[in-house]
Amino acid sequence: IIKQSESLVLAQIEGYTKKGEVKVSVLKNLCGKRLPKKIKLSYFYLLDLCSISGGHGVEFEFGDADSLYLFIKKNKGYRISTPTSGYAKIKEGKVYATYRHSYHMALVPQKLYEKSMTAIFNNYHKLEYDTLWVKEYINNQVKNSVAGFEGDEIDEFFKQHVALEMAYHTGTKIELERITPFLSSDNPHAQISGIRAIWENPEPDALEMIVNFIQDSTKEGFPRVIGMQYLDFQDAREYKTRLEEILKTMSDTPSGFSGNLMDPRVCTRFPRSTRYALEDLLEKWE
Image (cartoon, rainbow, N blue to C red; front, side):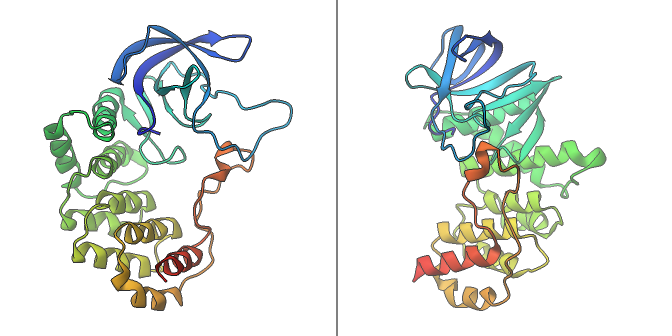
């Protein structure tokens, strides 16, 4: 979505046309091509429609947001990616932000959202960004213990989520010993971000750490599948024999996003179980 979009703007929804277009006031151009102060969103540029409710077609789903950030591409008019992606709502100064999938949102301050997402957008578009701030922010967040996913720690958890996901998107290196606590935590979201934070690290210690994580049956299926995707990205075929042994212990317990069958995101592709994911990876390596 970020790679294909051409502009990131802060905007306000002004209303809708009879054709179902969204009238938008651009409040701030953050990244990419500058847009006019007034535009209309006409449709979606990345929609793979798998489910639709009877009686009406696909619609924009901005709800009651005070304002929002939009990732926009100009293609037969101005468009966002899908009905459930390509935007981030703002309410009471906090952003409902997506750093990996819109089922896994983080609630973060606007200033943090703008700084981090500007870095991510500009990195993917091969533009300059504040690399010093990125490194300092990541280092400050991963030096502490893993924050909890509820109560008073939730704000700190979201900050760590931003740091780890930003490391993934910008390729910023983090020492493995600082990732270990996230993989050892009982929070699957922290585990997923921890794995993604070392995505481009091909070191043997990193590969071994992820293989051990995949083998750990006490961990949930979703992050273990992310670990397999990391091994696939690294083409770690030297672990094929060991993974074949691990496969014998795998279950068919569902590991997907779950969600509503009428949600257009229902066609998001994700292996249905750890066993299926590992079988698929080993077959690919044959």
